[in-house]
Length: 189
Image (cartoon, one colour):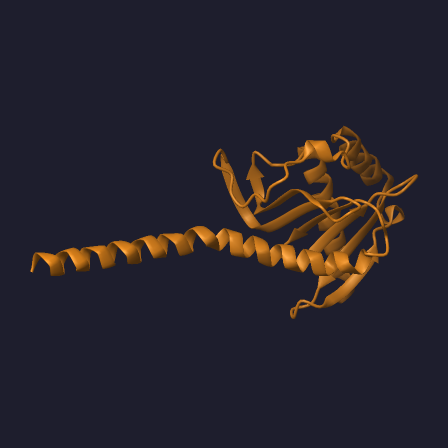
């Protein structure tokens, strides 16, 4: 009888451990899904051999900065409900007011050099143990060097404090993506 209790106890313990293991891997599975969708978006820009920064919300709306001289190229990409490319737009500064242009340039100039790969961590972050706040929709960020190696990659809530990347860069990406989303929703009306 004692053997039966021991076996039942061991089975229960292993089920609980397996359930915990499944919960721990959910953020990693979501991050891998985000990575796969981001890679599908970036594949459209493979002909541009340069470092790239990609930020997304909900694995559906993307803002991309491609290093170029004298100015970087910036794109807005939206996916349809099936995950196919719905829209790729070159983000043009002319569509912003002079005041917004000045504010955005200031944000980016105050950020650390955005293509300096030494400022980014090298592993995938799916949770921050020291986070004081995490709220909002899922966001994904990655910097890819010219060879496709990933830097600064994370999959976290859109509003996470502290951020794993430069706050000014994050604000620049969020504001530009928000502007593009607003233009996109106006055009659909």
